[in-house]
Image (cartoon, rainbow, N blue to C red; front, top):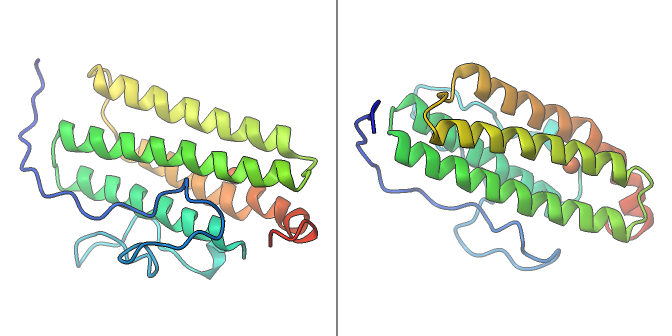
Length: 178
Ligand SMILES: [Fe+2]
């Protein structure tokens, strides 16, 4: 295969808490309680976790933190030039995590009879379709994960968490899922 990139593989860091954990399930030690960004000392993480990203639903906030951590990890892998194999692995982890997180969220929305579930689900599908296209093109060597792609993912995630996800808070609270 052409376009080989040297891959100084660094041992993979911790994996975020599994998003498939049932709501209320205990979190394993060494999880993402502090959401410490995995980045080099002098570099800002792509996304910094903070109160403005919290929606007040514990299971969702923990998963969102895991999501942010994985996106930051992907950013670090790119910046450090870890190579296609490692970048692809992290991207696939991010995709798997995203699917699992959306399943959790959609399950809770269904339980709460959230009226905007169909629209919310569509937003999720558009995003997963898009990042899977990125993954496929990267694997085929048709594109590289650029700054623009990372900014797209960052922008989508932040806009979605601070916008659409806030829409179901009152429905969750009314259903006792807050
Ligand atoms: Fe969502």
